[in-house]
Amino acid sequence: MLQGSLIIILFLIIAGLMITKKIPTLLALPLLAVGVVVISGVPLMGVNEDGAQIGFLQTVIEAGSTRMAGAYIAVIFGAWLGQMMNKSGVTENMIKKAAELGGDRPFIVTLVLGAVVALLFTTLAGLGSVIMVGTIVLPIMISIGIPALTAASVFLMAFATGLTFNLANWQTYSSIFGLPIENIREFSIYLFFATAVAAIVLVFYEFKKNGIKFAFSSPVNEPVEKTQIKGVTGLFAMLTPIVPIALVILFKVPVVPSFFAGIIWIAIFTYKGWSKAMNMLTKSCYDGFSDAAPAVILMVGIGMLFLAVTNPTVKGVLEPFMLSVTPTSTLTYILFFIVLAPFALYRGPLNLFGLGSGIAALIIGLDVLPVLAVMAAFLSVERMQAVGDPTNTQNVWTANFAGVEVNTITKKLVPFLWVITAIGIVIASVLYF
Image: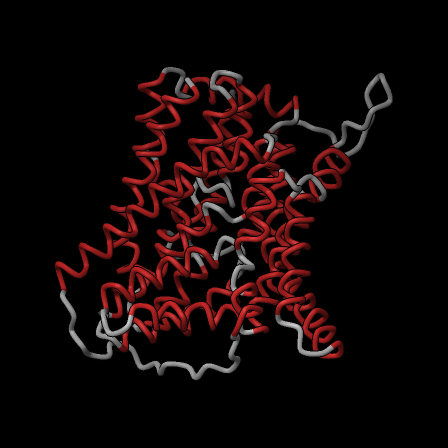
């Protein structure tokens, strides 16, 4: 019991250090993994009677660094495709076409731009892509009179809507929960509709509350379009985000080959000469790797923490505590995850890209909840974190660019995100109990 208490204390200390930004998440997770196995008494190195490695250097540090290899390779290829879309002008042209479609009707422009942002982020990923899209979308919204806070909030909600169908994220969740990607996709559909409806409700609410102020709220200028994409080839190029999704959903193609097909697709339909095409492919690849690097490093730490908390010795130490707090009935399941959903904020214990991956592994290891129910609960709670957490880089950048306070965005979005989370949890309780 003493060891279990020490591990919980360590969890709280690490969480506090992350919340106060004393230590970055990419260092906190490996540190927590090592601390957990050391407290539990897992040896540094060693073999059992069958000759299998049992030391944490091999079973946690070494094995954990590649535990999520499939996920971070998908992230890299997704970032490569995202850079191809950005550099070819496809992203910019899609947004411009959406603005033109809305004409001089601010409400319609906002809805259409939100839909395009959602579509783009089914494929795009990383802060670079957020900046690329945001520097086009936000000035357009603000220039037609949308208040800066509203524009920033709608942009982030549209971003969150697209993330529910982001293939790289699907692969990450598949690796964390050890489930086929089909299971992730099936539940993500429910979250997609819940988030999309919430985003639309947010737009209606903001327009009813604020109307159109026709005043610039941010010192930013609308960017000049750099690349025109026209004709049939341009139309096909702008279908790029749909290509990998269609391959995965309709033809059951694995995620990485689907991203690669998207890369080939956009290279063909934006072709302007062999030399230019090769340069764009190469530069996009390098920049995509750079965009993906933070997520890859984070996933290495997640893999280590996952293997640390699922180590038989550690599970034996933590099992009494986890059994006492883990919900076992439908009602307690619903209440537990809805009430505690804010613990996904500030890199908290329900944040899948932080301590949450370890907590999820512990709950699954207890075998008191169906694995699908655990997956659905954490994906629902992830809605709170996706654009509600003021420590997210996309939130910080968006707030700074729009000239609003990042915590103000959080206060505006959290009620909507909490409702989405609650809807997801209730749906999960019906589907998986």
